[in-house]
Image (cartoon, rainbow, N blue to C red; front, side, top):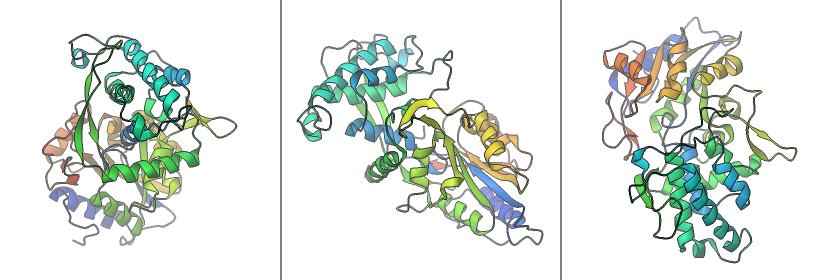
Length: 382
């Protein structure tokens, strides 16, 4: 059998299936028709890369205070579309008391007001380094990351929950790209780790809290090679992500890394913008909302047409990808990155474990930022 992708750390049966797929649908097939090209679709976060671009950007923005909002505006945003009930018990504060968005948002607002008054990019005279030494900065960082982990979407809210993207309110697209370039360059240098943040011992509404947060982001050589091999063999390769489209495009199209994807082939959530081109914390309803079944809608509306066919291959890692992994009859290979997350995706993992000829599981070692030649992952693997 002719091989099209590098061996690297692919799981054996998946490696063989991908090579077979490219031979069947690519330019080497005598029936290949460039006017009716096949296509493949992949999720981005924790599928195409190690880590999550929005979570990496959130970490960078919070640590570097990269916001374009005043305190009241910020306060309203961190409460937007949030369930008001108490958080689950695993998010109790260090005194084992229940916490909720009302309490945590008060503390975040108070800390942000102090930052806004003192930081030189806002209304103050202190440098970022000076502010980072203060209790109110430590309070802000720990409770923002805690708020991200602990808060759930209010199911009665009109729009699906997409809080991290909303934090880019008042940014323009070019500014988002510039911010992401700085953030990703910084995060790639960070040691891959699970970092614990503990709020300082100061008077607060929510009390002291502790939260663990995954830090780091890495490209995956196997996925880079796969996408390039598909394209070189006449198979269009698309990304359909549940992250904000500008954030994903900033990484996927960046010439400083090896993905080098075309912007029009990277799709994701779209936000409204005002007359000046500034981002608003609202979804653009002119496009499918690419979350869960919305990924299928995105493929059908924005990719699939009378001049192509597929997707012949789909890749994902979670329940957010379940629908597109199983929806299309023309899909020959559904790639599932093995993670320790439960839900509907378990149904497809079980099929992969039983030797399905459509569903395949690929293991990885998250903290080593690499695939491993196994169907199951090893080590910490959230």
